[in-house]
Image (tube, rainbow, N blue to C red; front, side):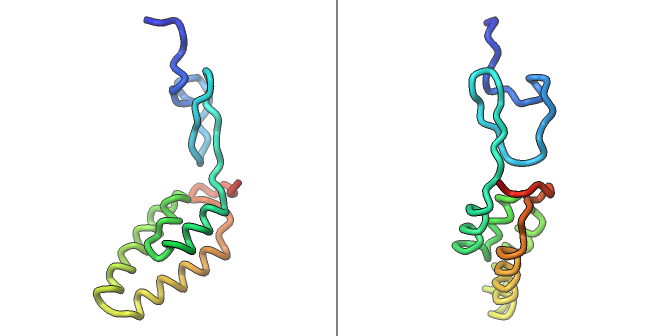
Length: 106
């Protein structure tokens, strides 16, 4: 066994508490927390928001799955359901300032 610590360990393995959102980038022997960006959230909402991708990014899995299924269902059932998801998407894009854990975007 090597005496050097694995730089790809999670914060718990380094004895640090886990942050609630974002992801970690390994650097030397410690993990660095990276916040999610609102600009990326908005771009995802604009480009492919009706599929719920922006909500998957923000950690809002329930909303993301609902938007995905309603969009697919709207394509199969008719236009009104898909339009509902589009309006929902625009509202979220404007109003949402936190991720799924309630942490503000960076």
